[in-house]
Amino acid sequence: MTDKDHSFIEKPNRTLVVLALPVLVSMIAEPLTGLVDTAFVAKLGAASLAGLGVGTITLSSVLWIFNFLGIGSQTQVAQSWGRDDQGRASVLSGQALLLALAFGMAVAIPGILLSSQAASLMGATGEILENARIYMNIRFLAAPAVLLTATAFGILRGLQDMRTPMKVALAINILNMVLDPIMIFGFGPVPALGIAGAALATIASQWFGAVWCLFAVFKSLGMPGRLDLREATALIRVGGDLFVRTGLLTTFLLLTTRAATEAGADTGAAHQAIRQVWIFTALFLDSFAITGQSLVGYFIGAGNREQARRVAGYVFAWSVGTGALLALAMLTTTGAVMSLLVPPSSRNIFPEAWYLASVAQPLNALAFATDGVHWGTGDFAFLRNVMILATTTGVCLLYLSETGNCLTSIWVITALWISIRAAFGFMRVFPGLGKSPLKEETV
Image (cartoon, rainbow, N blue to C red; front, side, top):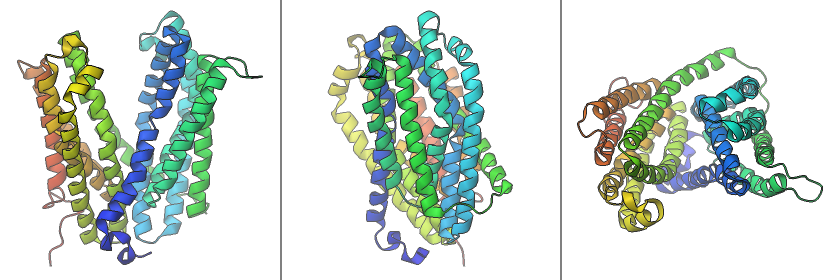
């Protein structure tokens, strides 16, 4: 397929939605593994559930460092696909998967050896620490599978195959849901293994997903005939930019949560309710960002900057429109959210901050959309620099504001943090700020 034959050119809206919907389903499915584990382990008691919490947050904190493998692979493969260079796409994929396997093994070994110390650093003691240690010792065995799957998802999405990741994500969760009660509580010849059973069920499903992903990648691109260490260096360089960006993003969110918590239990509880809804809405916005990344990367690789800019325009429009709908949904469900998620003592301070978070959704959507577009061009250093600016500004305001501990103030600052990212991300495309890969060509 040449870039002139791509369905986006004739049917941009249909193409964008058809590609984005499977991404949305797979993103909703991915967090379900943790929810299923939580539901079953809760039946074992508070100490087991607390140990599960310590184990999962520790694993997540370690593995997010390697999210560049999926993001970078998606961009590189999409651009190679746009150039109709399947050979290079195959080499890139093989190199990225090898890195994922190596990093996964490098994480698993010290993770197992240091699981008790890690749990202690998270404040676990006694029975909670022992449960967390047992859980992590088993779950770290799946670290290579998790990274292989995330990398393969990026490769497949770079090929605009959004359905296979969706099927894999659903299969992982279904298998985990079936295995959890069997492994945790026992069934027939299988003994009750408690929290260790939850970990075993999870790693079995994750390795199943990883093997499926490997078959799917090699079926699409074939086995790479060679590996190029220069490509590995380029991917690791991307990792450096994404590490700084993601680290700053996480830091800002942690500091806002700390500010809310320091203001008192009521403020912390109200902030947590808003944040949980905010995280859920991000799934809808990320689906357009990931789709935009693949399409922009494809047209950039094909040398068709005009169509890449056109993709950006459509992604921005669909994202902001979705953000507006999410804002409307949040505003019209204020009462329901308060009754479900907010304790009575926090309800008097909740509405004002909730309204701010709601009306900021279109801006949040634009920030997500610009991230996806710039991932597609490989403009990772620009995203890093914008995040440095936005987070530095936000953190300074959190500490300098006289009302820095007020929930409303926290969400005003959060909206500003989002606005900086959205504004610079948009201007990088329209009109084309600085050395933008998407700057309109002049005759």
